[in-house]
Image 1 (cartoon, rainbow, N blue to C red):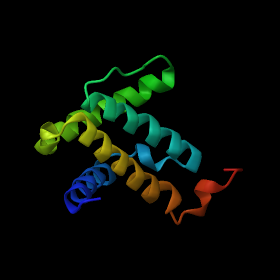
Image 2 (cartoon, one colour):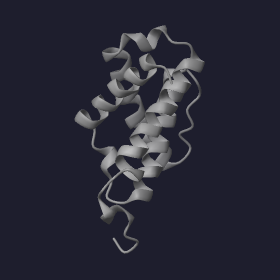
Image 3 (cartoon, helix red, strand yellow):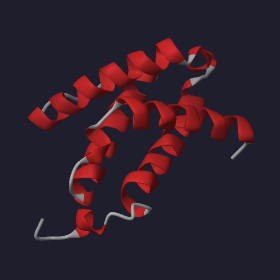
Length: 116
């Protein structure tokens, strides 16, 4: 991945880590579900695609995604210069990084405790 894309991903990660709490659910499987739901819907919004809000969970993810998409567009004007394919690459890299920081690379063993 080119340095410019990595830099853009880290800008999005920095925003999330400072301004949002949804990625810090207490269990790894909840974090994974929320990361997937919110980031995929944010990607759809940024790409002007249809967003499914058919379930209560979808509606919750959509609300967070709407806020995130608005923040990203307002704070990072370079997103508006990207085409849909570039946005999808950006957001997949962003999701991979958030998953690593909050799930697979987390040193918090409690998030994987099945009794928690």
